[in-house]
Image (cartoon, rainbow, N blue to C red; front, top):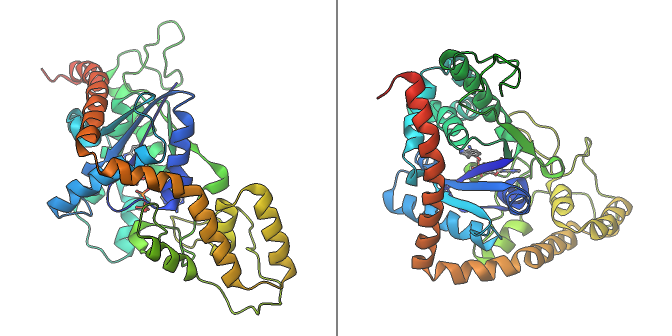
Length: 354
Ligand code: ADP
Ligand code: TRP
């Protein structure tokens, strides 16, 4: 069983990234062979300033390590250190239908925000599929917003195998039955952490770098406090019971394409961040009334420091040792490249590239 996932280095990491993705990465490194990378090619869609691109890539690596990724257990690398990914990206582009790309949420959302799309944004899912298929990943732990991308990767892997692997039968992708050949590209599945599918931001929309509604993991302490204190609430008086979300799913209500988010972000954030027994007490007093939103925000701030205090300490230490960081990343890149080289040999042979 091989696990693979990536996080874009398009901004500082936030608690949505942690609960939606990185926490699972850390758990999974003990259970399966794990590959984690910093998607720094992807992030160029947003980060066009070279110095900042380099800084954010480093920052993401330091963040991963501070949060508990262990380079002895998992392969940690930069996407751009394995250039084969760009070759596979092209070869997948050859079989990826434009109709799929036109209905990609990542693209449609940005267009809906009024951005005039560049090709890089349109082709984003193809590069992501190359990331996944290059390392023959079985499972891809991600937040819910990424499911569609992984479905595309599966679809295109099937299309590629059907086109280029004689004897491949989509009904038997691993070629278990006699006369069937296994695919060259392995079909991946998304692995979603249900309880924290979507962590809401301070304005109630999905927490996202691009909405400016984040609570950062390693940001300035004063700014964190300010963000938490400005979580959107209504005008329910102190004594009164507080409203709870209607569709009560932890970490936000159902939402289409990262659109609507949570009705009561403070409640949902407490649910995500507090240990279960503490949340039970909070939930009881929330429903009974008698406490103001300010008290609950203080509680959330305490939980933030209790949860991320040690990681913040490690982050500061690691950030002061860039040579060690580079060594870890080079080692990860070497291990990842070995895998990529093996697969690309097969892929090139299959498509007719010398
Ligand atoms: P952002 O939306 O801030 O740009 P990314 O797209 O880089 O974040 O996401 C990195 C990882 O974190 C992905 O697996 C994504 O699904 C997950 N993730 C991001 N925001 C959230 C959120 N608010 N709730 C749950 N998971 C999230
Ligand atoms: N698109 C992902 C995100 O925004 C980042 C990513 C790029 C990724 N390539 C990947 C995630 C491959 C998993 C696997 O979160």
